[in-house]
Length: 304
Image 1 (cartoon, one colour):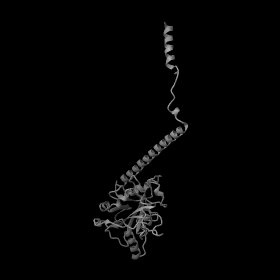
Image 2 (cartoon, rainbow, N blue to C red):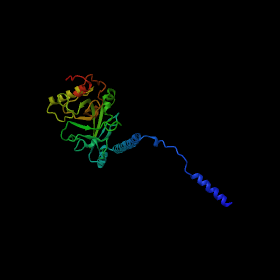
Image 3 (cartoon, rainbow, N blue to C red):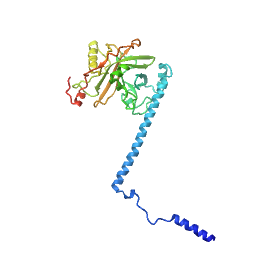
Image 4 (spheres, helix red, strand yellow):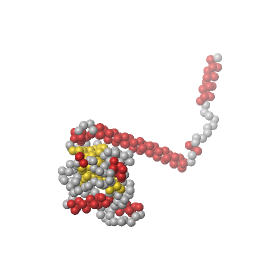
């Protein structure tokens, strides 16, 4: 009896593990070799793309955290004290820029090389976002009598850095948000935007490159000629009066209008008591002067 049961148990295992007499070919084995190569390449591209996308959003998240932490520090007390705290993290941090109605509310750095903070964040880490940065030959407190200081920032699609500066191309936005705040040392300065323009980073206007970042003016005639060109190029006709001797703040970022396009927003320092300026008289400039490449790109004849 035991032998019979043992035989039966043995027969069950044998039948359970017996190799099948026939097997159908797998789907993969029926694919031609060239198509297998294509399929494998597609899988590798898909994996690589997934890795890149993951890295992209992880960096964005990290950048958002850096900006959020810096804001928490800056607004934790008196600006002069909190800027010193931020400078302990990076001595290149020279001030803070804030514009209502935008995402621009972050530290301003400065390096000897203007390209450095295009590729590094405010903690000096490599980053596609970069940081807002002061032109390398400017002094934020204008100790060298620099009448026009320039701040650059990347035009990020996620709206960080100067990604929302393009809002100033809209008349209603300008009327609602004409002021810029700049903090450094123990100073808190207010500026009123008086010009919004497109320029070229390459030679234009028959070989003459307009310089919105010009810092020094020899006399009133020199300044007035520069201001006239600034007004002529502005997308918006503003009501802000600007005179030789006024402190000017210029913000610059890239634009998509043509190769080498730059969006420039210029503002003049105003007294805190004059922040009730009448900006509602502003209007669109029907024919702003653009760089020569703008007309060429659109197939227009250069009118200047």
